Image 1: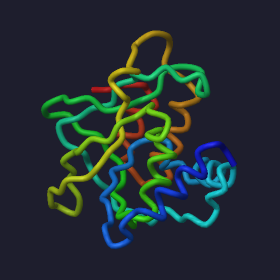
Image 2: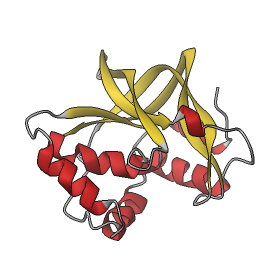
Image 3: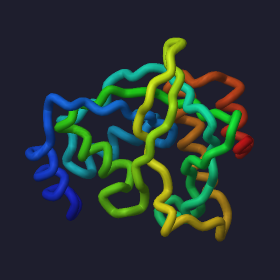
Image 4: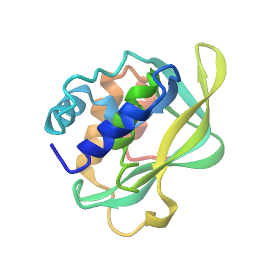
Length: 175
């Protein structure tokens, strides 16, 4: 358990359980094995990420803009790029569990911020929340983390993202 556990549990108690959040996940949270390991390391073994649905965030692209000591290089966020898209999964997260997702994504430590994205899912467009690099912490210094890219590809495969998109991730392409 880390020092943020009590903070997250207090936020869960105060959250509106009847206010689910749409969450667009495009990064390492899609690697179920790694996410399960993270949950157990942080004492969230009780939390289950729902199945989610294949989704495509519109007019955004990946940008490797956060230097991470843990990953040993830069990791990905989203940036606005008209006509581009990023695949992921759209989850419906119960309001009381949103603080756990915030913790996993780095919101609790100010690494990331929430932003709204337009997402195409099942032929319809909806708005969802995604997590992106906090602009105050964004940087292009240093190399992209190969270990992060491996986890990103593993997660994309296990999430059933399109094969050509997974290949693009493996090549490190962002457009």
